Image (cartoon, rainbow, N blue to C red; front, side, top):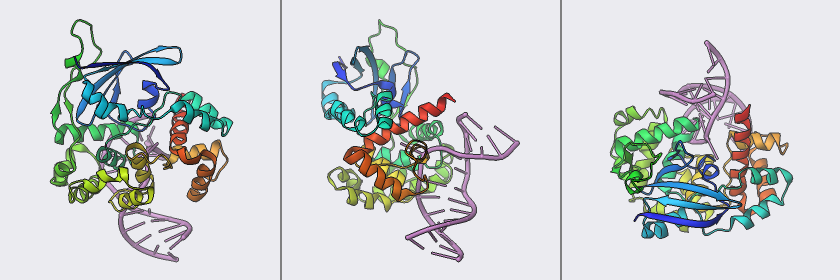
Length: 302
DNA sequence: AACCAGGCACTTA
DNA sequence: TAAGTGCATGGT
């Protein structure tokens, strides 16, 4: 039975984790459960809250998959209770943000998928980024099984019937032409994608996948050498796939936080970098996620 | 209907 | 080093 149950899970909430802007291939079903694709596998998750812990049902997950992929993917090795406590004690703004997004966890995603996703994210918005990625996957990825297959047929499921595709490899994309990418509607980013895919595929992706073991500067230098990857995109890749929790992506939303809540000049990148380093410490990447989710959900109300 | 989006590459001063 | 500009496309 490909079904895992985790009980007594603290500091984890599906909506907080999947809708804080770090991932693009998770979708909410009508009943509040989520279906996602990562590492060439589909997975369906339901949560039941009881007080401050949750029971998680992971469907289409074998014991091996859980140990080899999902345990690390959901960052279950880190103590978020302690991390949150440290951050919340810094200032009341962060305290509110942490409280608001208390179930956020930083996913440890695949570096290549994360690289492409954030390369495509520039000057765009989240709904459209998701569209671009899905069309890229459906046209150039491999079809994979639906998570519905492993859900008990007797109980009704909210998982929608559709095809699921893996994320295309660097080698696959490196062999394409710009014309072949037209249907994905990537705009001017298509050129960046091809150049970067070719650079990554040139060494079989070994340099990129090896960056988890490399230090911050080595990783940053390599990523910045890729076409279409600047400081913001590189920071996201390092934070969401390379476990570089000191990286602090600064985008329009974070600039908004820095201006509105901390009174900094939103155009002064080095001031923001210095301040975030002093104020949030070596785990400032996590602080960034709480603040990003906080300001974005707040603005959505208006 | 404008405005702008999880920015970057490229040019100019 | 700093400051400006074009970019494809679609959400709001």
